[in-house]
Length: 114
Image 1: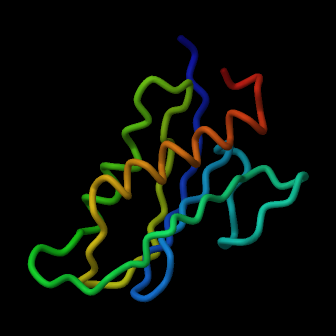
Image 2: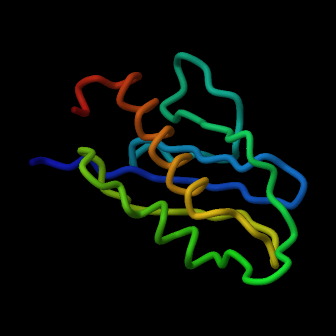
């Protein structure tokens, strides 16, 4: 199966909703912004509000690993940019669901990526 290189950008700031952007690698995002029909990137903002870690913090490495695992999609993570506070907690399920939903949104926008 042919894969399409994509860039992901994650925003994980305490007190804010967790956000993932994904788009074709040749179209780098400058910042998290609202998606328009013309935008090459799609954005998904989860309902989960990033929390201060009480025990085991969610590391940048853990976020990167979850974002790079694009599973059975036609996408391959060429780059992952993470904008995150230190000492945060995000459940693994939230990370995976946000990544999966963002990838699905990109597929809906670009059906030729299937």
